Length: 236
Image (cartoon, rainbow, N blue to C red):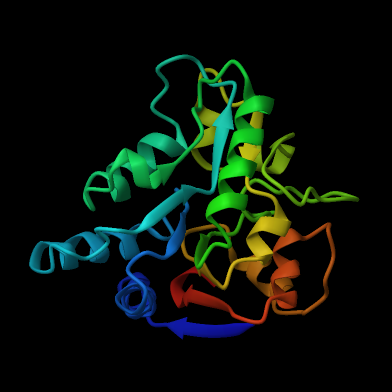
């Protein structure tokens, strides 16, 4: 695992952008896994700014969404889909034909997860997988546990996840998650884990110990040959 310590959020985002830009210019058709949340938002902004001067940038990129909340009230704005659409899909003009996602309001989550598994298998492996880290060490919505699921699946959310950040303020919080599995993540050719924002200090300290356990899912990234951790030093 490669650790990159950055002075602030902007420099962290710029480093991530340079890695992503070079990879896309080398392979414009690469398969990119997009994550929601604040940590990678600076990367997405720089990508959209770059596209203004280079219209062909990301034109043939293939995109898959990392995860989604389930059980929210219909019309809730607290979805990964809205976040990804606003920060990434729309600014980069990604066509529907090149974007594979899961509906946060689906009535058939198991079937939709199966469809995502099939798409990842047919399009993959993922070339670049963007991740953040949860306060309990989850990656995507793979929560700590005795066992972890390899493929895209419906998952139970940990109390530490539900009690963190804006989730605990929702009138109707999510009751489950739908997420890419650790097997699919670890098959990615490159992983970029962004660490920024509040509440990440303890998780980062544990990640550095290099102790691999399903009780701390982010530690499994030590098994990956090309994982980069980009750190806003203000968060640690």
